[in-house]
Length: 303
Image (cartoon, rainbow, N blue to C red; front, side):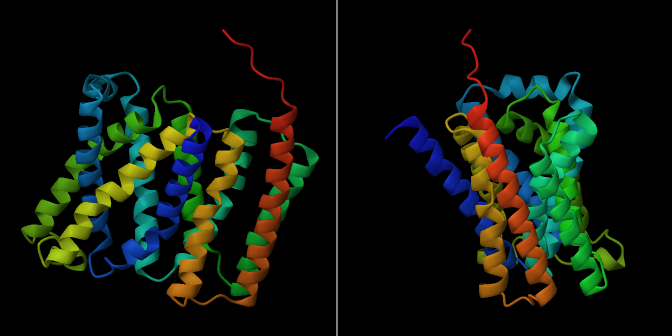
């Protein structure tokens, strides 16, 4: 099996895991969102420490947490934590259609950020694709009488996270390990306060962890659900073209969408149908244009 093929199947595994993750988090619907997020943070850190320890890279993690970029790592950590928390809440509250829309919007929002913040350029066709996506959100807002705040929140927190990561001189596995390492004390503190009944009335709920064996095992497994796809993503990104990675990413929100409609029976109105069709068209147009650009680009010189 070639290295490209290994990378391709690794990326398939990443997208399938992310795309079917609503099934996993729906099974934890009886556990408070913040507790799920706390366990996701702690158990993913445990797994990252094992992986980095096996690779002899714990010193690199220590250096990242004590170096000059630790503030940017902390900001990235807070941003991805907000993204994770919003996604988990959306799944538990029955808004998976909105979460899938958010991840469809994300690539196009990321392009807009590249233009506005990093001075990147767009072709006329790509600009039309972005405009079509914006019109889709406006139309959905008008049709439903309310903006798709969950979708926009998921897309924008992920865009901000990507922009912060762009300036971090760390690989994806090391940077996420550093992020969850910074979040872990907050997560552990929350769980202790929840266990001791120190939370104010709206947040005072019994711990799900330890309540029964299936829930406890699922909470522990949330670490693997978080860490393993990121490790596989890092593996795949080194072996296949980024244009291919970008196109394959759309498998994630597509599977989320299918989970929402086919498994969870969420409402999918005519307005949703029109907006999704417009965003799918925008993604197809933009992806085709970006793919043509990548094929025309001259190969990088060696050395």
